[in-house]
Image (cartoon, rainbow over all chains, first blue to last red):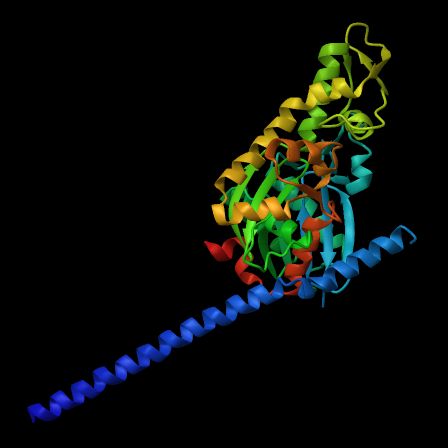
Length: 64
Length: 334
């Protein structure tokens, strides 16, 4: 009976460890992904659209 | 459905960028009120033209001074009117990103966001001006290199070192181009005995003001009121006089740039020597200022392509990529 209890406890601890590991990995992955997204959104390519729009607006205003 | 907005709430001018459309408003941050009833009579350019020329019952004021909100209620009313002018109503609730000086207090922060929410914004987020300026000045802040931006506004001068999308070092002083105008006013009063208004002082600064000797310098004729006789009087001002008058303000701005350079990590400091520093904001247009900063710091100084619009451009980019750049908003990092 005690052996069965130990085995069940062992399995539970193992399962908890696996769950924590997966959760941790997910958090890390989401951190990496959100940082990448943040950096990509600041790239010159991502910024071009806003710059071109305002530059065109300014040129139009100045009659160029 | 209203389009989301980015607002550069500057001491001198307010600019509004509308998502997918561009800059839809660019006007002085001035509001004219009826002193007796508290009723708003004019805002923006119309109110700016009234400064120093109003009868007793009208007061034309700038609700922001030295990068700080001097009157919360008036600022709130100005934000509400601005949003109304670009089409925000109770039924159209846009997301709003507002650029504010980095030295803004917690109370001021809450006042600005509350004002925007009360004016009809579904969500109001704040971004520091130097961060927005660096995005708007098209600096490669997505790379692990040191980018330095100097934003000289009407009431504040902020210098920041930015790398990998975040601020590494920051230095802000509550000194800006309005202090240059005030220094000119004080000098003319003291040395020539005449009183001039703040708009005249600004015109003098734009005509002959400089931080270092430049080519093609000329003199300026200034009209004001003689302090002794009370009669109108004209005096001639030289560029040397103006340089002397504004020296303390210019020195204080340069000292803050030097302090920021000193705060930067050594790995990034070497990048500045190669890439230089970028000057944005209306105050950066003062003749000879870039050369003066360059001379005193030994770091190349470049002028941004769109110095007056850089901050709102940066905030506009944040509103276009709202979800990806959420981490940059002031509340998100606390």
